[in-house]
Length: 173
Image (cartoon, rainbow, N blue to C red; front, side, top):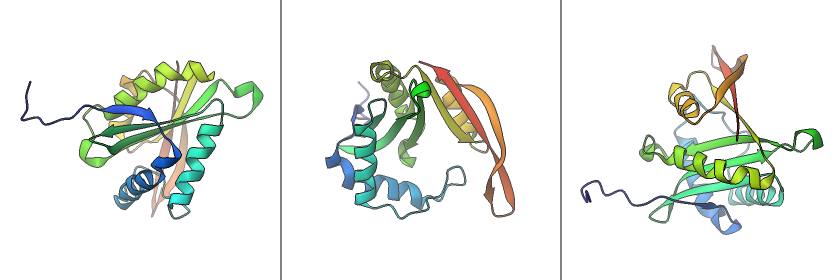
């Protein structure tokens, strides 16, 4: 046991309404990084908006909202929004966020593995996600997790004078 590493175990679980304040804090912290690799939000993040998101995902029969905790703190979140159209309900659209100070420590992989274990139980057999082309670390993670590039949405994102492609990726569960 390497106590000098001081890495507590990671706990993956479903988000509940009681998580809204901590999730709001987690998301505000992420937003404050102002990363050029994620969408900026059109609305201010509030506890009410987090409650609505948790409720929406938990009330959807083909969606999941997973949290990664370490020492009782949220260090990662993954939402899988199942598509609503009857012919596409087997497809889930994935979003992942990991706290800056724990990136590269397996939090994203642990969330993906939990998702892969659970997706079929909610009727999802195909996963899709989108990632900014200027985010090679995320693309590398998704490829390690078995995602393949399905396509490109050229110049979808504008950052000042720069246009960024968005990569569409997918995999079967």
